[in-house]
Image (cartoon, rainbow, N blue to C red; front, side, top):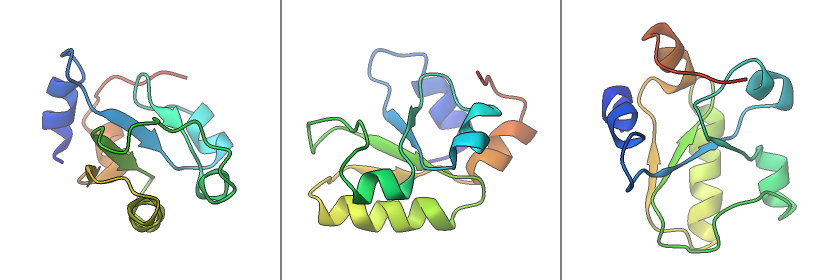
Length: 102
């Protein structure tokens, strides 16, 4: 998903759930508003607070892409079907000056 498309969708009632798979310090340094923090290890240990519905739209992000791609594969194996990666990832979101929270 393109960053501008996500920014627009986040302002609607049908916004996808943003899953940020970066480390704790990365997440706390700034993240997309209302993003769910779910690092890979938390997902693998089934401790992440992910949506119960396997049909909900999820947008996965990390800083540059590799971790989000791995999580996309893992979540697919866990039955999630509506998975998307953020193009340009968190680094592009930040460079675009889009809203962030800490």
